[in-house]
Image: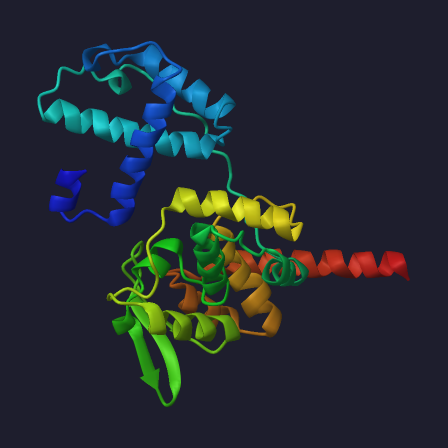
Amino acid sequence: VDKLRTDNRRERTVIGILDLKKDMAKFSKRSKKRTIDQLDILFIQEYKKYLRTVRRNADNTINTKLNRLRSVVKWAGRLGYPIDDPFGKGLKFLNRSKPRTVFLTKDEYDAFLQKALPDKGDPAMKLTRELFIFSCETGLRFSDVLDLKWTHLKNIKGVTYISKIQCKTKELVEIPVTLKWPKVLLAKYRNVSTGEHVFPSLSNNCVNRKLKMLAEKAGIGKRLSFHVARHTFATTIALANGVRIEVISKMLGHTNIQTTQLYAHIYQAEVDKEFERLNNIV
């Protein structure tokens, strides 16, 4: 971790490795003790089983954690630790499932705003709620919300714009801050922030855990992750309010408009489903 920071690697990478360390500590209590030179395929298979049955992780999440472990094993080998790399011996990753585009409908988003209230004495849950709402109404990814600095805010003809290079794609996005909640949150943190970043830092794993609790409070049956906010922005916030697909594509920082077209298809399917429901009522 120290070397990652020395090499100026992204903080998200560092957080991922620290999360892996916590996972390994919990798993090691259930597994037989091993020295580092006994790290073998059996250990990896037991870890996969632990992630699936105890942690109830999805296949894609398990693959992400295995990739992190593989990176650590390779680094350790280069640093001279006596590791016989088990990943080079035919260990198979899980088949990646096709990702579902989950988003909140207008009713679900309203329920989140009104009912997903944080527990008293849980600042992480309160911050999670605010970060999620900010993303729902700006379309910024989790990494970009946490990376957002006061210098990224520009005032053009009386309108505040978020103007920043995206962490993931390195593409510039410029998003007008015209909706209620981004304005409220920026004003709030302008009064309390003492550093260059707008929001305090929080790990992605912590945020996603808190989101599941908030979804339960709001009676939302969907499996919430932070990325659901970005999908919600594209469909419920932008498309439903008549924003053109080309504009949404630019606000999301997509390099190919075909990526954004997916949201148009999803939104149209939701509209068709709603009309079908109305027809059945009539």
